[in-house]
Length: 187
Image 1 (cartoon, one colour):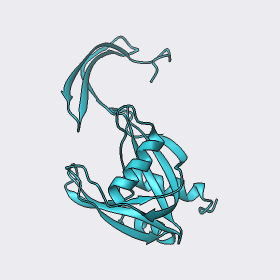
Image 2: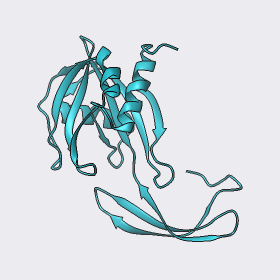
Image 3: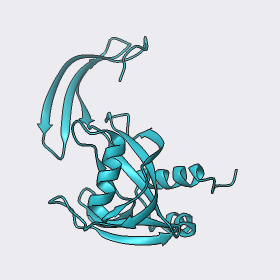
């Protein structure tokens, strides 16, 4: 993160108001390029997360259905999770796929990295493709996880986005990025 642009905001003070394993929230005092001082500008800090587009040998995509407390519902999406301290993003992708689904596969291929909500977060996420995924392990959940695995033919994904079956914005982006990476989107 850089403030090199001449019109960048200048942070004069920062304090952490929440610092837990689930949320780290920073309160900044900033000076705008106009000279105006803004108190209490909140930024959610994160180490980022990985989303995995895992493709089985028979061209099915591994989806997860799990409760998302912020939204208050069970939602369908791709496997993924937060990057642990001192963990590289591809290692996170490999670990999260194994823990959430019990599947392993070829080494993760980076499709791209994307910024989540730059107005009030420093979050970045990484989308990985893991080919030849196969069930080799038992699922191993964090205390807040209870995940059902669903295998879906790759061809159904766009219809599932259109009909609202898959609605998590970062996962929708990840699916389209993966399909494009695989050459499956027409120009």
